[in-house]
Amino acid sequence: MTAEEYASKLVPFIQENLVPKDSDVTVDESTPLLELGILDSLKTAILMNYIRNELGVVIPPEQLSNSNFKSPGTIAAVITDLAASNAG
Image 1 (tube, helix red, strand yellow):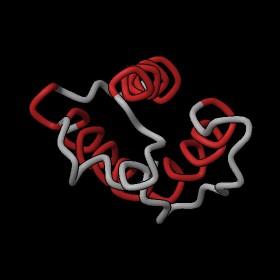
Image 2: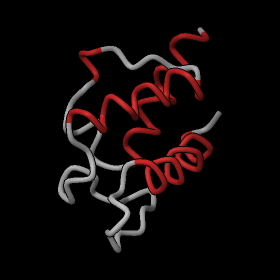
Image 3: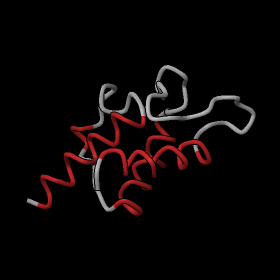
């Protein structure tokens, strides 16, 4: 899968499961998840489970950084790199 394809799966998941229901935030590839407070430790764990179970990619602990989880687009790029390195 490409980064765009991963992002197209991440964006709706984040919107439906991680954005507070009373929020008017609309998530896209460049939404600053950490700046807006959408990701905290619990929601990051939920997201990691989704990535592992639904996208088939395990993000190792050393990849859990603010820069890698800045937005759905940066998360998709990390997933793409990990998937490519695991396939090779």
